[in-house]
Image (cartoon, rainbow, N blue to C red; front, top):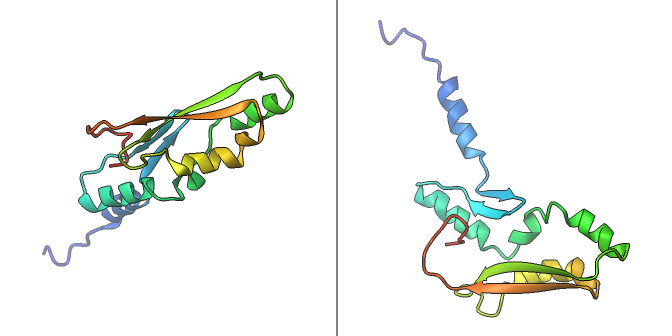
Length: 130
C-alpha cells in the first residue's frame, strides 16, 4: 500500500535548506563575484546586494590589510598604491563606496593612495554587478 509507506523528506529538505543558506556573493583574496544562479529572483538579490551602498562595509577587506598597515606604520613602505576597478556606467566619477573604505583606512597615511580605474564594457561577466 503506497499510502501506508513512510516517506522520509529530510534528505530533500536538507538539500533545500543548504541551497537557501548559501551566500549570494563569493569573496576571495582577489575580489568578489556573484555566485551564478539561474533563478531570476536570486540573481536580482545578488545584484541588489552587490550594488548596495553598504557592500564594502559588509565584505571582508584585503586579506593582507593588517600586514600592510603594520608595514606602513613601521615606515617600511615608501609608497603604497591601491588599484581598483569600477563600472563607469554605474559610478561615472568613481565608486564612492570604495573611496569611503579607503578614506577610513589607508588614506590616513600620506604615502598611501587609491587609484580607481573605470571600465565601461557592455559585456557581462562573473565580476560585474549587473
